[in-house]
Length: 278
Length: 313
Image 1: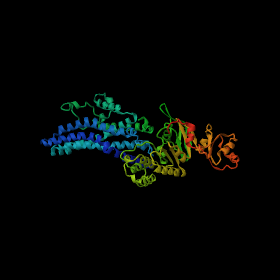
Image 2 (image 1 turned 180 degrees about the horizontal axis):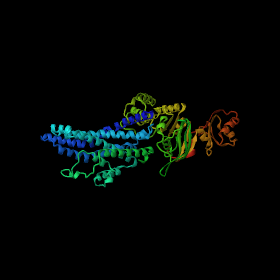
Image 3 (image 1 turned 45 degrees about the vertical axis):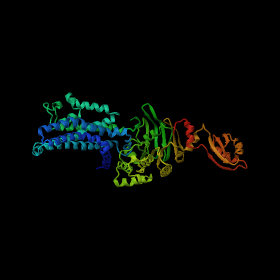
Image 4 (image 1 turned 135 degrees about the horizontal axis):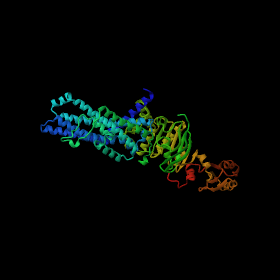
């Protein structure tokens, strides 16, 4: 490793130490914890109610419930708003709090600062939301009879599903992170653009094929191991989708993140501290 | 770092249509340089331009051979104590300085040693492990000072560094600045307190409405203010007798007996010539006690150049 790279690595680690501490502080992180914990609490409450009434879960139905909660609340709202909070805060939030100069007065290349802060955001949101996903899956498994749970895990592709759901959660944080990091640079007041992105993501199923691909949720849904069917209890939530292969979906999500970072790097190079105008 | 000076070449900075600074040309040598001017005169804008927090709309800035938009190299030898009073949340004073040094890429052991040295210099050792949020204004000012000089920078930029400090710490801090200047460092200070600027500065830069109205050593600047003849206070036992002789000099504009009756206040357009001629003019029986300029200070120069209505400074 060249001296330059080892310096950048040390600086990124120093940024991570600062940012992770900040993101996980209860005072700042409680909204994130709440967003991640809400569906977890709901699914575990269902387990408790079933246990009290001596009922056991049904794998087919429970996996659909989980898929619906994951796709329509967790991905679209919880992770979306969690990433809004964390990634907008990285630069725009610090401008508003008048604390960004702390970083800009250090011998850290601006692009290194951007990468360090972005990584801190990805790690924070991934830890919180992947833990949420794991706990929700644990609730689904806890509601099943032990034999059925083992059969699902080791014979029915359950472990694979768990890995996919957790990886999708992390990819959602990576892609939404790139989008909101960039928005923090482009908009002084990002509320309206965030609402527009939310509406765009919600309208994704109804968009023409080409426009669908300019969205994070399209690629995330393409990764889902279980689709919510267009018939039955969850029909109103179903998405008429044309999934693409998983490798293309992963590439699409990474591309969105890289585009966000690349455009963000162009912005951060010309970033000025002019707190008076914030 | 190849140069010896901080150079501004025809630098202007506009905030939209609002002027920040305009056509600034400066070459700042080592020593203590004070930026003096009313609120909104462009002091902080100049400091932010120097440290790359702002970019010039036009012109070029060179900090000892390094451009301000190259933070990777610039902040190896530049420290900036801003007037922004906000800190990353949840940090102790120690962590505030420590994290800053970690961002320089230094090891834990190096950082720990440098942090304590800087914190000791600003006399904040006992409060080092307290949360910065609980610090008084003076303590926050001191920890910012510690942060800005913990890496022993060659250029120290200090925006209102004496604000909030009690008189004892203020005196110690000024001594610290002097020792840094004597070690050949650039110490750039903006201050509202003119008598302190006067006492500590090697050179001053007077700003008004975004323009540099004067720069250099304060005596030199004063000499160039030709609209206002220099005032000289002569302490002596017979001021009236001396006054009658002094009017023989064509360079003297005014001579009046001091209000305490123990001296003569002279206004002259050519102080150097006046000093030369004074010995010849001293009449028998007049004992000179002292001769000193009476308005050769930042306060007077500031008032002459910018006027008493120049704004609050």
